[in-house]
Amino acid sequence: MSWAVVAKKDFQDAIRSRALWGLSAVFLLLVGGVSVLYATLDEITGGEPTAVGLIFFVGSTIGLFVSVAAIVTCYKAIAGEREVGSMKILLSLPHTRRDVVVGKLVGRTAVLAVPIVVALLVGAFAGTALLGEIAPVATVLFGVVGLLFALTYAGIMVGLSATTGSTTRAAALAIGFLLVVEFLWDIVILALVYVANGFVFPTGTADFPAWIYPVSQVPPSSAFVTSLTAVIPDAPMQASGNVPTAEAFDAFFATPWVGVVALVLWTVVPIVLGYWRFQAADL
Amino acid sequence: MPALEADGVTKEFGGVTALRDLDLTVREGEVFGFLGPNGAGKSTTINIVLDYLKPTSGSVEVFGIDAQADPVAVRHHVGVLPEGFNVLGEMTGREHVAFAAESKGVDDDPDAVLSLVGLDGVGDRPASAYSKGMRQRLALGMAVVGDPDLLILDEPTTGLDPNGARFVRDTVTSLRDDGTTVFFSSHILDQVEAVADRVGILRQGELVAVDSIDGLRAASGGGSRVDVTLDRSPSEGCVERVRELGGVSDVTVDGTTLTVACENGAKAAVVDAARADGATVENFETSETSLDELFAQYT
Image (cartoon, rainbow over all chains, first blue to last red; front, side):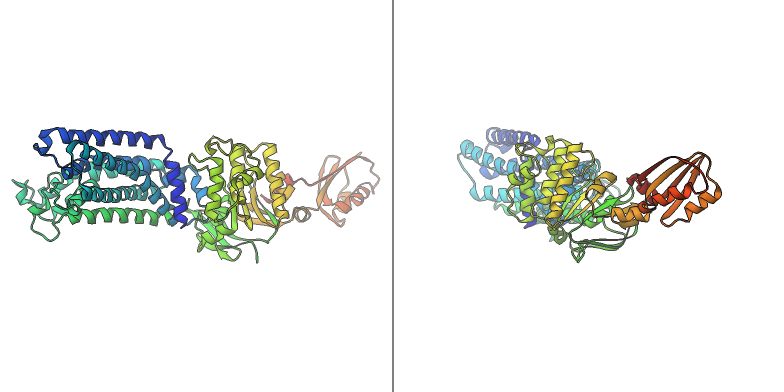
């Protein structure tokens, strides 16, 4: 359980960061504001706000926020300690490098989980107060998927951080990831569709090939919202960018569970690759 | 079983050889000083022992445990004061020591450890606000938590004031008296001479000598030097006679002065031989070979 000692220390240390508390405050305001908007603006709900609808509205808002928060809290996790030399103290004690990576992942996930749990409570409270109803099953499932999402993003960022001993490079990798996989992914999809359609833009989404659906779930924030639709009963389908929902495609892999698969893959692959680089690295 | 044994360790960094075929044994219970100029490979050696670096070839064992195969088992036996380390985030001094104890699975009292290394009363302050000397003491405290069998100190006195350096020396001596093996590196000769039972000298990645300080003195020219100033230039026969004396290893002439490297016991014979052909000795000085000269000879 050596990783647990590292995780505890890492969490205790990170929880003191003013940046984290600032981030959490912004997050809280965001979720509170979004909840009030949802409950009061008919333009959003078509006049019929529901507790489940509120969850999705909050969920689609926090996706990008969590990704940015993950960069702030995680990009230095391994690279920073290597750069300043505190990794030498950490590894002078009886911890394996795997303990360090796992401990960092768990510790930073816990740090990210704090604002998510708070957001959940605020959302549930706002829902009850403003709508007079609460969706307990959906709220708990939102919490579970939200924590998985925090783990996913912590895994990506800690994994990237583990590949290098330079925080400059770690920051570049993290921001590059966010740019390409989150912000520019719509363009990637359009380019793929354009090429697949014989270098002509299709006239409508009906002409999109079925494989574009899983590709649309590559951005973790899209996969997060889609995962919510997969696990929450009677959830409204949510489109990811320009790509229609799973129902529009006739293929066995056109299901919202692809979002869960994407989250799990993003949770496992980057951290394993990062660990693989780190365990062979000269400090 | 040796406390530490390096066997044919070579480390290359992108074509540059930092360590070449290093064989080294540190015996249990001794204080071993690892001496060499900056860049000789001292930290590289220590970093391989701690598995911070992977050797290009060769192996290191600590109490019979392979350092690369099972670094965690090694670290259960070893306390480390790394070179160029930094403190952990915003944790206080006490939290650092408590973290070390928790990591090693022992229940040492953090305040007792802080007191041992002279950090009474500052345990509640963040270690990031400590001076260099205080950080060095803190790391030493973390290293001795759990009473390690082997203490590895990489340049422990660098950047310390004389009080701090003496504190490190005293700590090393008292730990050795308790049976702890100590392996420490330094480029400062006085530090090594004061506490080391044996010394290894590293030059450009190769171990050029391993011996006690006295042994090194003897091996490198008898340990003493005599400067004999005569009233005239010494004749060739005189120089030859001195050179052939037992215990004399080197003779040089500068004007009317003979400089002779020799064993302590040969000094009187040197002076006698110098005036044997009628010259008068106007002055003579003797001195022990300084460690600086010793160091310069080897490196």
